Image (tube, rainbow, N blue to C red; front, side, top):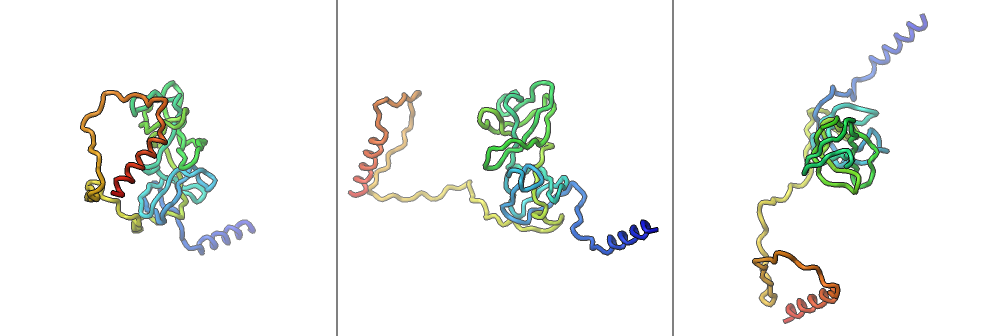
Length: 223
């Protein structure tokens, strides 16, 4: 009897709580509602930073853990694999051996590699971006890798969020050339280069040469 009464009370309390902050069904796309938001290798502030998100950026949410959203890594994020585990041919790496290989979250601004994002099957291929030290390749995050972001930094699905980043400069045009004073001589660019450039002689004094060059420029400007 007491148990039945307790269940009834709990049911009434549950019904009285407004349906706020419900977690949408995953996966879903949403916008970042703050600028300069950290992504992390795991669901918590104690996990290392893996990158940044900007306001208005779209992310794909795959799940939720402890108030953190698990998302597909944006294009500017990356991962790591051990050099010893991959056979590299140009920028394509193929997993060696017959065992799965760990893919680790690439840290942003620090040297940490302890977070495993996923495992690659034997013969799986990855895109190599560059070599990190002597032990790791930095790779494009493969399908299945994830990072985390504080769910409070994400808007409700369907909410309009304006991108606050300044527009990128137009890199297809060059600025107008600056006119130099008549008393400054601009050395012409050589039209041909030697096939080989010899080593710097051991008696060459770079500091003295730089001082002489500065004196020459100052003399031309003061004319």
